[in-house]
Image 1 (cartoon, rainbow over the protein chains, first blue to last red):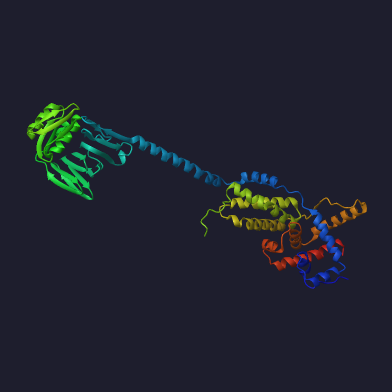
Image 2: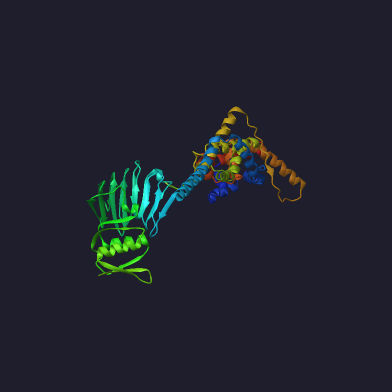
Length: 305
Length: 171
């Protein structure tokens, strides 16, 4: 006769070792106790049929290749291709920009004429430097200038000249930009020009000039403005300019050093030829009522009489 | 919410990891249920294939329950349409036993009976019993896997032992 158990989880709790001591005693006194032990022992020795994960994985891969939807493949590859493509494009653009950098420098006594990509022209005076990027030109006409240059700008998109003191914005016009010694002087020969410096700006018409320095811009009229500045024709012309400035230009034009013992702030209206130093010195001394001497080091000393 | 990218199952290396982690147990699970080795092989592979197809939508930590649910459903589908041939062929491990032919004969006879008894167990009892005894899963783990209570697991264990005894003793 078979005895029942106190509850229907008894044997489960026995297997898990969760029987109370009294319960364990009751179990061990049962007739069928050894039967259960035998079953457990028998099951212990049973093993599973051989299962190889490796083999199964290989079979799975084979099945997977057939079933794999094409979209997943594309999705996996696209990001890599797009990343590679974008890097190449960025590098390519970078190289193009680097190769597009153009820079022209004149030394003392040297003049230069430059044609910009849109057929606008720049005439560079002595000791000046102009820079622009031919690759980026189509996105905006931008030129940086240090020194002095005369611009003939073809009508078109915005044209900007960037100098250390300020910016000149143009639309189809001719103008002279003088950017030296923390100053910016712009003379508009034709058309219209906007000069900006330190958040201020002035619009120049033909025959007007603007001087920007120390955060201010002064607009004034040029009495008789030629079609082009005279330096493009080989003559440096000054309208009530301080002697200091005249001499500095002379130094640049002739690659000389000038020492003047008189008042260098005196203002002169004066012109000198850019190709004849002796004539220039004679004219200057005459205007200053001084005499000049060239010493052993090629230094020119000008002394008032 | 964690902003880190969770392990992406759609990557083959991650998927392979999941496979080696779960395939054996998944295979055994269906084998215990069915006693049909090739069915267990087919169903567990099919479960993984379906996981792969749905890889975009399954987060890594839900993969295991997905696999077992799919496998279970495939098994139920199979049972609906086909009779399952339950034949447990559980290999015997080599045992150090006294070189007594009678003893050995008795042993092997019993083992054959045990195999038959296990095959004859109702599937619910058998699955729980073998998961505990051979896979060494705790009642808690089995309960979580089968989505039943621990008490229910214990009841099935208890009944399985009683039934096995009945079957092996020809009662």
